[in-house]
Length: 318
Length: 273
Image (cartoon, rainbow over all chains, first blue to last red; front, side, top):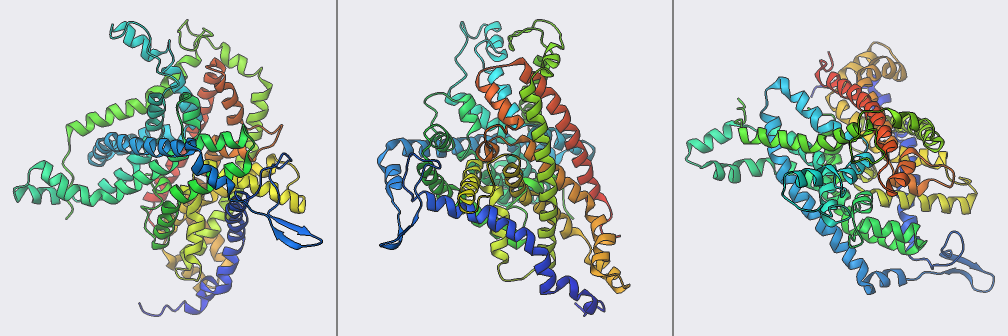
């Protein structure tokens, strides 16, 4: 590129001082309200539980005799391993997240395909049909399912009227209800990245594959799938990660046997007032679930690719 | 030349079924809000009694007011900070620590809400012990928490618009003698406005909708609308909640439609012309 005549005048925009001015406030905000809190969670997971308020002892203790003393314990982490309850919750969360991701993928792919191939004048309407439910209140949409799945709710009444069942099915407060709620709430997160990927897809590649003698299934497997794979990955991450930490859906739709990490953390914190234990659960959750996502998001953001953060990029539509 | 994907009837049927699945629960919420019966699941004729009952619920109205205040303030904060951050990242492609900034921005997008809520609460508690601020929890802590999460979303929305913006426009303004601030306010900001507005609306709706983070960072006496709705919903079905849901849906749908139009305007307007 030739040197712009505006090089001199551009200096204020591209200079280090310019950068400092733009970056100072938001960066300070993120350090204080995002990075620091995560560090505090980590430190409190090492603190002792006590009956005071807040219910943990300070990590750094100043003692007139001994000087500065560090008072930390690993007992909350040991407890995570000793008590099978946490492992069950972890497996429950990962299992639910995996099945939700898979079911969403199966439902979302035809939807995204139909959207990407629809005539231009229908697309906006189809996009709105997917985006609007996902912009309306999450809590209220989950609440809607408590009505639909109720013992005397529309689903049971319909099944009774059709003669398929003799007495109402106990749909509510079960893992099935949680599964339905999760798929319902997270389906748009899968549809939108898949749509973005399919929209960029070059259909003439499929013609070429067919010309070369590929069956539709072979063409799908060897041409379509590898090309839309980034969209599949992005959608899966957007469903899998939040589902692992989900609290509202297992709490409102689930039963006593529904064990998920988000709910465990919530109950340790609010019901048991075990803040250090909740913090230890949080640290494990962060390491197990969020770290790959964090690395990926940062990487994609820096690279200027949009697959890493399609929640919003896709929210805006195409 | 790019070819089109072949259309598929099966995919279209799949779309219609999927859309039905997405919309049926919402429609059922709205329908049962006009139900005369106290039993939410049994239809007993059309009535507006639950809308009337809604105005008698002081706790709900107070919570709605608090939620509105929090949403407005946090959206404003997040929009200013997020736009600054997007500008920094767009203008400075390479600087030390860019990776770290990208990480900080991306984090709220992928962190489970319970994590964000817990970590912010522990920060507020520790700060209060150390420096006495924030004294208690409520409006201030809610605004800070929601602004932190929404900041990331605003940055992404504004960044994607900045990528398509022609930098020569601002350069031309500088060439013609405008100062950097004047160039920003007369050229760049008007071009960015649709994305900034869309980001602000997104921040607003995110704040209005949040239950989990608010439950952590709020204190006694400061209940947001989702917190009050949640405590009602836990006790079972309530037709008043259906009425509230219908009003809420109407409000959010209007906001969402405005945001969508802004986005389309931002995408279709001739960039940099």
